Length: 392
Image (cartoon, rainbow, N blue to C red; front, side, top):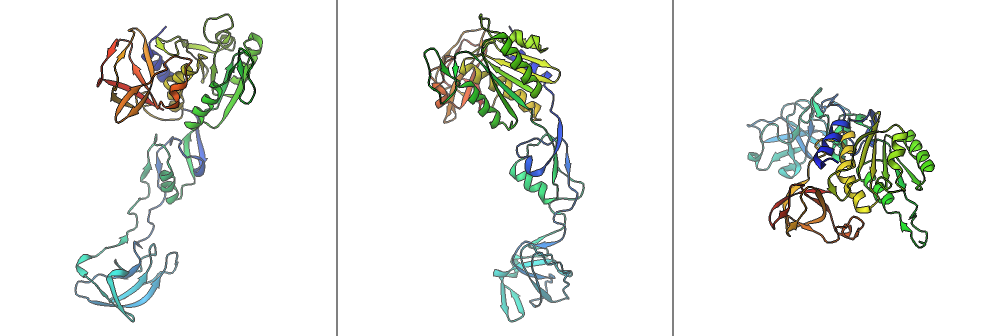
């Protein structure tokens, strides 16, 4: 049995970034750039007006200008202004040759084709002009490797004409839910059965972090059927998650089934609560996590080990660090030698430990928004002591 930190160090050293794929820009939201991305053009690609107003050549000694042109956005004609002349111009329209300044229309007094600037001291040469290359120069890095692609990022990349982006491809994930006692939602329970909650919660967590290719399996606690399911999942997925059947009971066949499938053990059993009988393994580049069957253990182990591994696979950085250090709102007494992950809620910059910490008990998840980590050397914490918090 190993410590929490040892288990995380093993996974951190084992998981490598996923395959790099060039995807259409519209398909890259929330993914991670796998390479530095450079601009192929200057933006703006021409000097243009930042306002609806009048384009002029700035001269300190001029008081009036004559309007000779009208320039609209998208107008492909190359206008040119002579000295003392002005062009009626609209936002985004190319600045005509011979001009260098735009005066907003609300600061212009117009009589016929003549204009005069109101409060000329507010302006100077270059006012209200977006100059060529002001945003981006050709060859400039506009997105660094490791950056997450947001809607704003997509706008930036589109503005320089990039239609395809190299990203770390999310893994394909298979979920295997084991247990003879499980019943699917929508069906009535018979005596001795419980509803399958682990399948839906794992599916939701995977979707939340951007995993779209998910295979779902169910397996009875029977060695041959379970082995067939494990083998099939490994054929389809990069990462396989199992729930249940990983302890040492008479009907726990998962560990043997993984060995038969050629999965090499990375670790088995962690000095933590909940979720002590956690198995992590590898087959080639494939990852396998066998989680305990208790629902709170599944959620704990997913958030502490599976989620950081998947995010690291997808190119995210610092996936293993706590979200926050916050003061406790209530005291804790603990058992040294085990790390405890407690269901908790953040309120007013404090972390509140919730009732219902048993591994079978999901009621606290109705309000919880994080886990609070009590380290294995800790026996007691007081109100106001800082504690590591993992948000989900």
